Length: 208
Image (cartoon, rainbow, N blue to C red; front, top):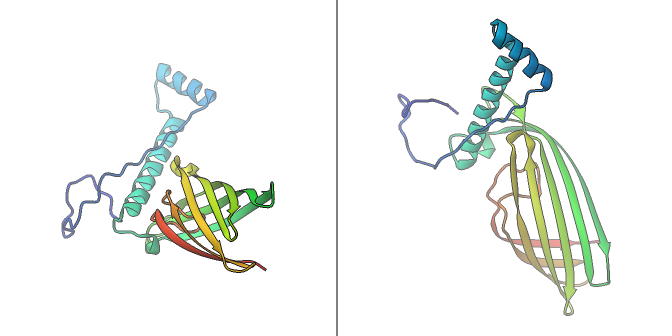
């Protein structure tokens, strides 16, 4: 993906306007960095420490800008990403009564992503996923489920949250089919970088 400060690029005509995307980076400096930088302000000279922090902030902001542009549908799509990920998850549930179950899930992605398959420049793409779930059986063969979801991506300083609801119909003791609605735009599969999951979905679950 090409990044430019000009309104047009020779040989690359604008085909579609996809909206506004932004990239930000918030960097912190500790007490000692501030102290030595202040001394340099008095006696003169360049602060190599601050220059390094500013260059790092610029790199992060540009990477975030490119990543969000890809999410909006610019040149790169998720199918063009190169992703390296390790995902760990913990899923717990507890039966309060025979018809009422509460549950939770925590998942963590240790990942790196390159937005270009040819010029591979990887940047961190870690993520935390937290889900709280409430399942209630009613009638003879019905079950309702409500989930609260939160996805946090620390490298992008981005947090997404919302809910998911689903109604299941049991088909015997070991199968149930459901229809639901995802109010968030993300999946509970942390290897899925397509943020287009909002809407109606169908689900078929079998147990042994």
